[in-house]
Image 1 (cartoon, rainbow, N blue to C red):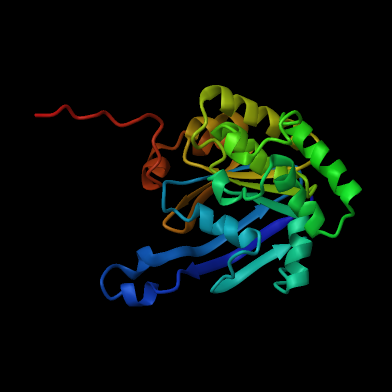
Image 2: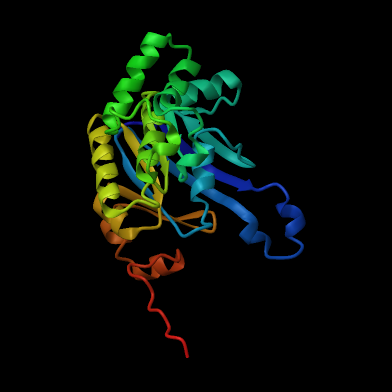
Length: 262
């Protein structure tokens, strides 16, 4: 089995200000991460499952070096993460994070300008950066929209634009936070087709979601989170058929019945 690209060992994290709030409520609930150990290996298709507030986004922000753990380790290619400016720049050439809301990630005037930001920031010359932009836009089906202002793109197109910006870095691992949020069925199918192609080329993909059907259909392995902990990890079929486990994680195979007004 190949060594992990990314790994966490007994990761703990509490948001600043939680100590003061702990006097007013259960301190356990304020721990965003509580002993999380997880590995992302080359070529993986890993779904991180959990209800809102389970710690999924916080974990992703540790994996790309945005947040520093209170205790525990984040490892990149087997070595503790170098949190210097140079170390984080090197990490983000190999590990790209796509946020749930594309508007948290997109900022430039046009789509092509936005996608070019990462390659230019790596020090590539304009011609090399332009080749990366063309490659990333083609990979996400946006090759004819590069000159459009970002505000003219639909929500689904902006989601793919954020993905294109990540792909322009040519990462080995792609982290996606709720990638299907806000997409219609066609948009979901389009996105998953792009992810299929990237994974077939060897890219490791980790995405967070609370949709069990999506994880069952696409992931090769799942990790189920609740209250900042990994409750279980492994093959999708047995874990996603474990009703007590899913109930403990506040995940549901179907929507609960709605009560009629009295």
